[in-house]
Image 1 (tube, rainbow, N blue to C red):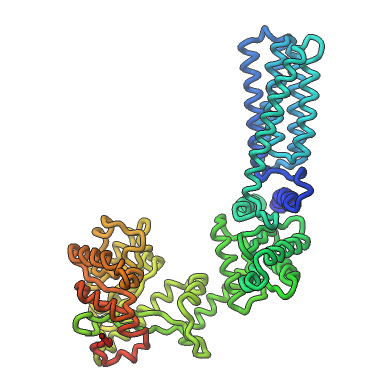
Image 2: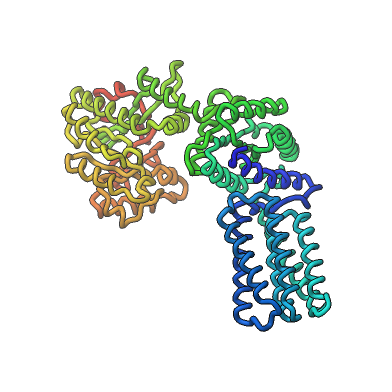
Length: 602
């Protein structure tokens, strides 16, 4: 078996006993969640090394207290050697070997204490039994730790109560200390284990899954063995919950968890992310993993069904790995549910986007931006839509994740911008909005050739820079964007304007706002929606308008949908707005020849 598989099997043996414990009956066999080979080897090695060093220092400082200091020094060196070896080979430590090392440590302490001679010296060395007891409590099941502790107590009692030893009082003190410290440590460690266990199913919860992912990645990096992660989601479980009630629905989830657990191989893991989402982790190739996932899908008891998305490990980032599996799950649900999709198949998303681009399924619609005082059509915002062959328009919430998972966001952004500039060139020749606003994603803004693509596109269509407004989302301003700022400054020098979208809801500070190359602030629709009743959004809007005036920036209000909002904005001096009150996004032909829009006002 590959090291990676064995490592995961070790983690799963812990997880499996914990799951059984969750059903009540075998909690005494549960090893703590911290008992990974690396942690066991590291901590045990530190205990041995530090214990050996302490004995050497004690012998060097008070060698006359001991009958045979040379033997004690030799045992201390052996302990140090074992400790350093355990630290160096910590990722290879198996549970049986950890038991042997701990038992060996108890034996070394016993041998040293018998060689100490004086009762005081034996008592000092016997205190090291506490380290062995703590080690067992940290990493072994209650049964294993108890057996080790019984052995430690027996050895300690024999050493301290033998002829010439310090006697029963010292034995009671050392043994009692060992039991107390080990018991507290064992209880605390198992409390931590419980925090990573789902109470309903006994499976690792989100925190436990995170630890399993990190361990699996670590094992895969060492062994090169393939690892597959899958997310399984019960289809339409909310309806089941509403129909049967929470208690019955929980029983179904617990039964499903047992069914899947029984069908998983020993080297695979099962966890619960929350609600009706489960995680499967298996050291296997994509093909083998798909077969396993199909078995799990078919094992779901009717009338329930589930969708499963899987992903092969291709980097060392757990969040990316989870995101890939989640994208595959999305594809499975989008394809009709009750099926398995692998992330590799999500390359089909890339093919779908490329096909949509080639066949004209991706289209650009335009929403008017009007002068609130004159009704003049000042500009239009370009908005991407995906029109399926049957005529249905997908919403951005449906198709943007597909484009993002396909890794084609920059290419699609360029398509939208080039299409929009072609349209505005046509409007300028035949009447229509003279300026078009195009959204810019963070990926494109930070690409090195962003400005080099925009400027030639304008030149090819004989358009001035003032015909284009680039709209950036405030959340994209988070972090270091020196490359993006440089590109925006270069474009502004050619007349292109820059707008910040959703102002007031993102990460931008006022100091950063003064440093950014901006021309337009767009008031987020969440503030516009508050322009009813007590007008709670009014003061914020007035503050934004005042800020924009002080900074010399234009303002556009987004999401204007009724006359109350329109009236307030006009009275507050807001110059421009967009929203359903003035027009929904429409194909470019609908704005051809349109120069003004007059909403119906009471």
